[in-house]
Image (tube, rainbow, N blue to C red):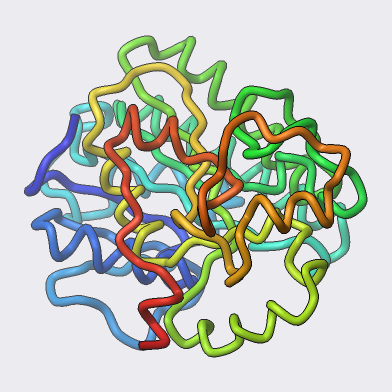
Length: 299
């Protein structure tokens, strides 16, 4: 369990989710090192930035052990870095050729998990993905709704296949380091407040956003989930769905499910516009409770 004052290294810190995560940790008193290939336009006060290519194992190891005087006088494995939040990746399928996406994302995760083990970093929080649920649901409906972490992963792209490999890597690194926590956060589609203006238009066609059961996550809530995972008193490998408490739609969730997925059973009552991506496990084990909704952003 980490707390304010601990040093956290955040990879992918210049990305959409990464920027919010960097702010969240900085505002809660952590010593933050943000890592990316591209320097962000601005950094919160006191945040260090390191430009690195994490497909290079040597750079990953240096990042989590020692970079000159960045972490003070700490020999390898002595704990100069307290936690790793690993978000760096090609962020979606189709942006690069399939092999390039898989190669980049899987080797980056291996390098960082291995470097964390070498450097004595015992708290690793990393970005898994809702795509492991079997997206697109329009092509392959889920076995039940609300979906959760209990059924086997069903990757449908090279991107999600790499995430499946990442989760398996985490399981074995946690086995090798029994005092460590490797917590994978299966983020839903990350949104910022500027994105919410488009949401009312989704109501015209229930199929427009059915590919992920109408889910999303506000970047600020995704950042809170990262911090709670770093602070959680958990060891071993665990995976958590991280989504908003509601859907992107104005129509009731049960009504949407009945129209688009009539053969998929509802395992429990889903009142109002409650999410169909279950966040019960994250609520129970991390204390996660989304604080932001697109509905508030349009007030």
